[in-house]
Length: 350
Image (cartoon, rainbow, N blue to C red):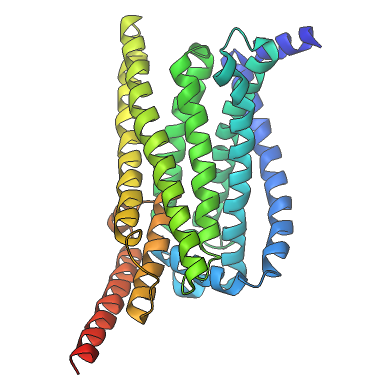
C-alpha cells in the first residue's frame, strides 16, 4: 500500500538503509545471475552460430589480456552469456526509471519515485557483485575456481575505475539529489545505452558477415550503436552533466561540485573513447561492400572485437597500458591483417 511504499522510500533515503539494501540486493542479484547464466549457456550452446560466436569471444578475451590456454569453450560461453544477462538487467532498470523521466518526479507519485531509486541502487548492487566476482577470479581463483581467471588489467579497468566511479556517482545522488532532473536523464540514458550496445554487440558475434545479408545486418548494428552512443554518451551526458555541476555550484555545495567534477572528467573520458570507436567503425565499414578477401575478413573481425571491447567499458587503450599480453595480441592481429593485404596486393600485380 501507499503507506508501506512511503516507509520503504524513507528507509532508502538514509545512508544506512541505502547501504543495507544495496548489500542485500548484491547477494540476491549474484544468485539470480548465476542461475540465469547457466540456463542461458545451455540455450546458446545449442545455437548453430555458437562456435563462430565463441571464436570471436575468445578474441575479445585475449584482447582483454586473457591467456590463450584460459580461453576454453566453457569459459567463453560463460562470459558471452553473462554479458547478455547484464543487458537484461540494464533494460529492466531503465524501464523502472521511465515513469520519473517521462512524467517528472512529483507527477509520477511515490511508486514511480521508489521505482527510480530502487532501479538506480540495483545498478550499484550489480556493480558490487561484479567487483566481488572479479576479485575472486583475479586473486582467489586457485582457491575459488569461479568461472575463469580474470586478468589483472581487466580487473583494474572494471573494478578499480569503471564500477567504483559509477557507484560513487549514484549513491550520493540518491541520498542528496534524488529529485534532480539531470540525474534522472543521465541515469536512464546510460542504462539504456549500455543495454542496447551490449546486446547488439553480442548479436554481431552471431552474424555471418561473409554473406551479403549478414554484412548488411552488421551495418545496421553499427548505425544503431553509433546513434545510441552519440545521443546518450555524447549529447545527453555532456549537456546534463553540465547542468548537474552548475546546480551544485549554484547551491553552494562545494563538496559535490568538486567530487562531481572529478567523476565527470573520468566518465567523460570513457564516453569519448566509446564515441571515437563507434565513429571509427562507422567510417570504416558503412561505405564498404561485402568483404570477400581473407584480409578484409580478419580486419572486420578485429573491428567487431575492438568495438565490443569499448562497449563493455574496457577500451583497448587502457588494456594496452595495463596488459602486455593484450597489447601483443592486438599487434599480432594487425600484423596478420597487414600481411594478408600485402599478399592481396602482390596477387593483383601478378
